[in-house]
Image (cartoon, rainbow, N blue to C red; front, top):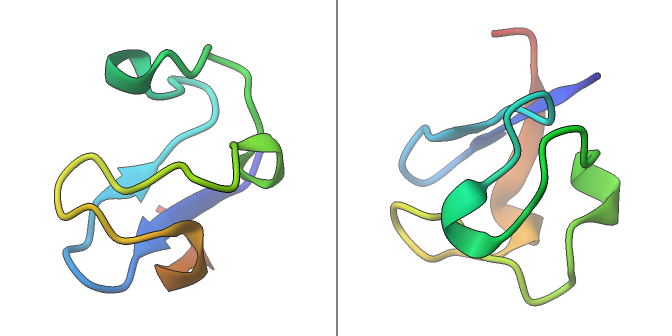
Length: 54
């Protein structure tokens, strides 16, 4: 599954891990994150993320 990097702080969303702090289960693709989901480090929205190969 595609990983996404925050263009503001560099945090990487890995769908294989999810975001347990925000109750996002492992295996959740970035595209299926809620519209109001924000970066756990800097709180920007999904629009500030881009695909990455990390």
